[in-house]
Structures are given as C-alpha cells and as structure tokens.
Length: 216
Length: 242
Image (cartoon, rainbow over all chains, first blue to last red):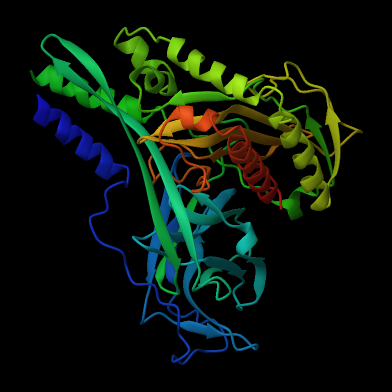
C-alpha cells in the first residue's frame, strides 16, 4: 500500500516537472569569440509543417541552440544566437503561432523574435517586453498572416548574464484503492529554480488553429 | 483488480485535468484596429481566499468538485472559512483594496498603450463568469473587454503559502462580437509546469510563508504580496493587448 502511494507520488512529481532527471545545464554568456554574420542565415531553417484537419490540432517544434548554432551580429556589435523556423508549410486560414524558448534545468534563453518575409525582410518584431510565461515556455503569441515565411527566435543580449528565480506550484492527486473503497491523496509541490539567462537553450515554435469565438 | 487499477488511472487523470485552461486567442492589434475599449466593470471577489492545495478537502475543491462528486466525499469548508476569517481580520483597518487597485491600474496601463478606455457597468461585481450578454458598445467603443478575476489571495502547495490570482480575459469586437483576444492570466498557477496553453506568472519568491498564521502575522507584507500579484497580472493582461 505504502509502496503504491510512493510510486504514484513519484510519477506525478516527475510528470509535473518537479523532479528533474538531470542537473543544471551551463549558461553560455559570452559569445564574443565567435564569428557571427551580419544577417540571419535562412538556408538551414527548420521546417514547420502544419496542415490541420481538425480545430484541436497543434504542432510544436523545438530547436536546440548551442555552440554549433548560428549567431548574428548587429551594427552596434551586439551578438545573439538564434534558430530559424520556416513556416511556409503552415496551411490554414487562421493559425496562431507561439514563439519563444523553453526552460531547461538551470538556464533559459531569453527570447526575442522576428517574423520575416520570403526575402528576409522583417514584418514583425517582438522585444523582451512581449514575452510571457506559458507554463515552462517564455513566449509570444501572434496570428499567422499571408506573407509570413520565417520566424527567428534569438537570444536577447541585454538579458544574457542575468538570472531569474522561477517558482512553480503544483497540485495534483492520486486516488488510492483501499479494499473495496478508494481514498484521495493530494500531491502538491513548491519548487524554486534559479535560471541563468543564456545564449544557449531551446527555441520553440508552436502552431495551432485559432479557436472560434468562446470555444472552451 | 484490473477494473480497480483502470479506475485509479482514470481518476488520477481527472484530478490532473482539474487544471483549467482556455484556448488562447492571440490579439492582432494591427488587424483589429481597436482604439477605444469599453471595459466592463471587472468581476472580482469581494474578499481574498486562502486555500491549502496540500489539504485534502481544499485540493478536491480546487479540482472543481469533480473528484469530490465522484468519490462521494463531502467538502468541509470550515477550515477554509477559518483561514479566510483570519485574513479578513488581519486586513481590517488597512486601506488595501485589491479590486480598486486592479481596475485603476488596468485602466491606466491600457491608456498608456494608446487605448481610450471607458468603464461600463456590468452585473454582479463579484461575478466569476464572463457576461453572456454584455451591454452593446457600438458607438461607444470599438471593442468590449470583459475581465473576471475568479480567485485571489493566498494558496499553499508543497508547504509554502504564496499569493495567487487567477483572471480570465476576453476582448470582443463591438461590431460583430468576434473574439479578438482570449486568455487566462494566472499568477502562481497550480498546474503542471509543462502546461503551456495559457499565461502563467511565476510568483515573486520573496513572498513565501511556511504556515498560514505567518501570513496573517505580517499584514503589511501580506498586502505587498497581493499588490504584487495584482500588478503583475495587470501587466500581463496589458501585454496581451500590445
């Protein structure tokens, strides 16, 4: 009986992200030694294919940003790492895109985002102030429009080197059989993680059909 | 035995599904061309609550009562009421008014984003649902903004009491009732970290107490914690309308 409860608690804890299977990842805060281009390289964009047949479908694509990822150097000398998503494979009249980065153990890539057209010209730009947490993703959401070809998720050099303390609360529970009856065992957790802002991390693009009015 | 195990899995899933989400509708400011907003008098609880996510009864209530009805358990509200009474007592005589702070701040920050805002009266000030038939705002504003805070105050998980605030927002076109933006903005949400459907605001780590009596023993700090929750929630709501 006790073993069953412990097992359930552990399952719930792992599922909820409260137990990390790996230790903190190193935060990369200095990319000054890297050779960076003065434009975003679009040829290796990660394709996002989304042809929804139903309103509840969604697609999510993660791209790890690390030592082999491209970097961009602006005219003022600031450098940022980035990942490019090719969204030309997204089909649909009204699709919502959510772009940003995912929390990893001990680190987070502070995101900015750009939407580019076929020629690489910027159509939309999202600075740090537009990003909000959605669970363990720091992201911005926006409607897809005709003419969108690429979404660039890049690190924010102004925030790299800083840190953020993220508290996650979780309540769940398990219903345990005891003889012919069952009892409810609540499971809750309160975890505090220090996240170091890093040029390396995981960029994510999610696409889903924009819900119709009032849909629950 | 197999039936019992299956039931257990189903019930655990139902408990975890008690985490409420709403399909996000992202706002397209350029396409919507909204300049004037009719803000319905926001729904906001009359008083803060103080529920213990680690307590069986409170947790069952937080799960929407579904489990409670499934396993036939009665929810004993007396413990919750006792804590809320202590919180009321601690806040007596202070000038803290979360509802006023929320509404005033929301109007100011929307105006800072270039919107012209007019408040329209709505039904019950403590309503917990969006208005099903909001007042017509054609000729008054380009869009109707319905904001409902369903819960605020303190909550405990994992042995720590922290402030919380849960708000649902929907912006509709005055012209044709098209939903222009819809989301939940949850300060210190109680759900799985991987859930990414709606906006979640991690609570400020400085506001944390191991026991509820510690919360009410420091009214000034407790108020600062709730003010922080209100402020961050308003900031996030306005960010969704940029």
